[in-house]
Image 1 (cartoon, helix red, strand yellow):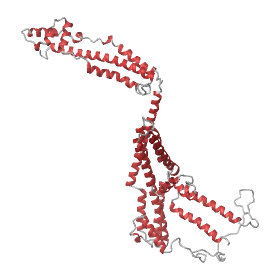
Image 2: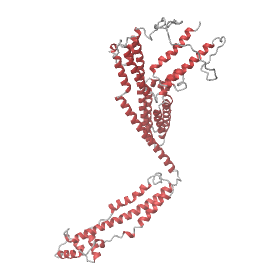
Image 3: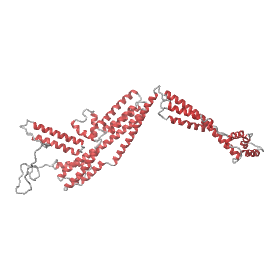
Image 4: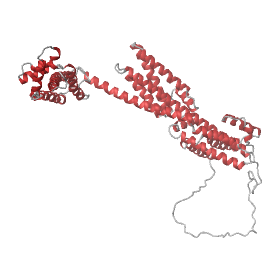
Length: 550
């Protein structure tokens, strides 16, 4: 039989309709069966709560229900019965009343005989009047409503059937779900902050404003000439201003409180009742050394790894308690002493995640999150350590500038002598040596003659020359004396009690000194200026003691 013949094309179209009908029947049956299974499962889950997290109102119930027709269609494609050409021929014979004409035609290639041409002509003649849709009409309308009311009933059940929890499984699952969400949020925040801090550290390695300022200062030192005092002083003042600005920028936010506490440690306002180990770590950090804290964090990371491998409940509980105490100490260091909110937050998250690791269903994920939070704490500490190193370098630069000013005043600031100097320490040692050789310290003022000569005057009255004419007029105000604001009040007493003046002086001096110290702490004056201010008040006290009657 030729594939281009009308009879063959008729049989093929009928076979296609038969296959579509078979797929439709398979889909219909699979859909009804899956809907029934879904409905029964929904009832069991909602009324018993034995499988928390599955088909509950809060999760993807609709997504699971939407999978029912998709799965039914897939089953229909895979398991439907595929019709053959003889099956289509039998259906055509039955529909047209032909007595096995098309069945004989479908099998003619495998049969022999002189009747084949007669069968072909007869089948071709009839094929022109046979239509496939009449041979096999689709009657899906009869079953359509069964595929509508059942899923509609299930949809009502999804909305209307409440979630019961007679065994407490759902409540426990909800608690675990909330913990998992909180853990995921904390991990995300840790990852974002860790990426930001690492990028900041990388940028500092490539470019640092503090290093650039120090390099410019070294270059300025090398260009100093003893005979150009004014130019030298102008350059030094410019460098001092620039370095002081960078110092204030670095210490403006998170380091301000830490540096002010460093200034008040001598007055026992810092760490009086705190742990000695934390005080030691704080002092090391103020010097730009975070080795002690970094070692502690590394030990905690190793303890976390050991905790993840420990199965004994008793040992696990002991190790857990030790880790909590160590993390609490580090958080206290970050919050109370270093005033580093970012580092304190990372350590707080690590403790929370450590507590979550006590839950069996979150143990591994929580420990991994705690490790990441500890890595962030180490990165925050490294950033703080680098900042403190920069501050110390800038402080040393400001002190070296002060030495250079003293040498410039003595006309001994020579850039040619700095050829072997590479670090600020080298410059500081060189300038200290030159100052010592030239007498050191501030230039001493000799007692002068007064009236224009350099030095401290002897006092007395300055002579006047009445022969010089001036525009001075001797007048007296005639304004009336009325009540008003008193600008100055002077009181005179009789003989003062012994020691009263000294007590008043001490009180005033202490008040002024305290105000100056507060200004140093709150106004963030670079440490390069601190010594001069403190030395001034110390000199006042020494002069008072020297002038006191013996």
